[in-house]
Length: 195
Image (tube, rainbow, N blue to C red; front, side):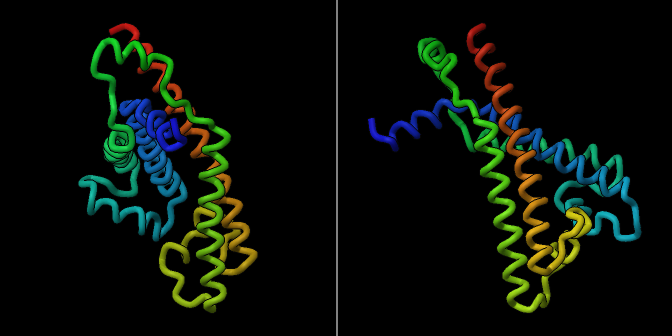
């Protein structure tokens, strides 16, 4: 069996329900947490950008009620994305028995390092490119990123601080995704064993 075949077989074992629940919870709780943080923070311009999600999610706004709507909407979107990432479920009883205890487990450390590194590299690269360009027209998102990442600025030192924050956020998300996914896989395997 070649390496490509091995990867394909491993990905086929991933539980679609586990991916859906893990992705849905991360997106839902992330949006809910970000909304509640902006509500607690208050201010005149609070949630100016995040509030635009109300155009996609009816009823969503930057409020406690909107955080609950956001949790529900983002969970549904995340669940659908997770199901798309791993759409396979065993069909026959023999195949279900063969699949028991063979689902992919995510290594939390690897996921954390990968997501943290990806987020940090993205923030640093975009900010450094803006600094080299003279810091002109950074865009609304980067201009206001200091609200969420204290110390971030459109400077090289600000890029380093932003990268550190982005790495920490990516690390935490990697831990959460792996833990939720692995927990869901264990539950799915127990469900398969009972059926």
